[in-house]
Each structure stands twice: as structure tokens, then as C-alpha cells.
Length: 117
Length: 112
Image 1 (cartoon, rainbow over the protein chains, first blue to last red):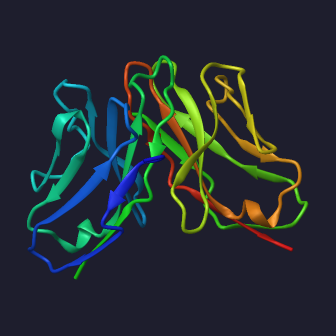
Image 2 (image 1 turned 60 degrees about the vertical axis):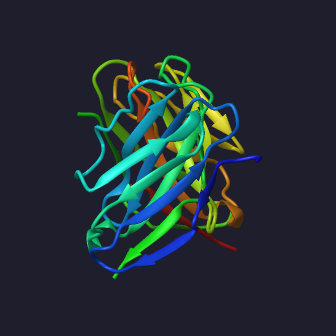
Image 3 (image 1 turned 45 degrees about the vertical axis):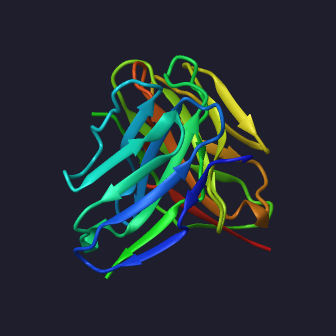
């Protein structure tokens, strides 16, 4: 596709349920990022994948959050035992490469709005 | 750790007014600086960037200059349009890292 796509666009779930959010990066992009956008917290980094390297999980808020990236392409963010404070917009981004030295532009998807009741 | 501070919004202006959105940062090393924009109902888009001190990023009539001495990257536009109404995010990427640290965003509302 032309850009980063995410699904679903909206997800409403009950507290305690598990959810999976999907991200399809731009074809050929080796780096993939997950961010969370919530009221009062702004945009926060969650996790980052670069090629076949071990992901940088330093932004994950708890062990209920995990992510995978299969075949260097599609990524799934899983939230187990969801809590109301997990309600937010989850954004995925991809870039051709990673690294600050060339400041590779990160292209963002439209996001998944998660509401935990 | 790294952080970005933006002026709180909303900023409300009339069309053709001058815009400034302040952004200051705290970071070790030599970060690259960015402004992203999120139009209503759309995803986040890169507006402009600067990778070293005194660089000026510009796009669509917007400008921002990387000021190392004041650790600032203020966004300016000489004459705003209604179509500029959006949320603007200042961000940094520190050297040696690949992830963005964002400010909390500033909503701009431009009326005709």
C-alpha cells in the first residue's frame, strides 16, 4: 500500500479482555514503531523494531503490553487484561531505516482508537 | 531523560494573523528536532525538521530555527489560513536513538 495502515480503526472492549492491534508498514521499511496518544500524556513511545534485531521495549508501560513483528513486516501490539487507563489512540509508524544520524522520516498510520469500558 | 515542552493550547487566531508556537527541549547530546502536524481526522505528518544548530526547517509557509543556546525550536508562520487548523507537535530524536520524544501538542484554531 501507499502508506502505513492500521486495523481496526476503532476498538471497544471490556476491562479485563485482551486486544490485538495490527500495523502494516510501508513496504521495504525496516524500522517500525508503536506510540500511544492519550489525553494528558500526549504521544509516548512504546516499542521499536529494527530489522532482525531485538526490539527496544523500553517504552512499554507494563508487562501486559507486548508486540511482535513477523517476517520483518506486519506487527501486532497485544494488550492483555485491558484496563481503563489503556484507552488511547495507538499509532504505528515506519521508516526506511532507523537512527538519528540521518533523521529518517517516520511515516505514521491513522491509528487505532482503543476504548476500554 | 529527554523531554519537549510546548505552549498549551488552544491557540485561536484570525485568518492572516502571525503564528508562533513555542517549543523548548531538554536533551543530552545533539538531537534532531521536528514539527509534526495532525489535521482533523488524519494521521500525524512531518511538517519540517532541523538536524543541527542554526538550521532552519521550512514547509508550507511554516518555519522553525534550531536554537541550541536557548534549546528552542519555535514554529512560526507569517499568515495563517483556516486550513492550518490542526494539532501541532514538537518532537526530538536524540543522537544514538531512533525514537521520537514528543511534546503534548498545541491545537491551533484559525477562524475566517
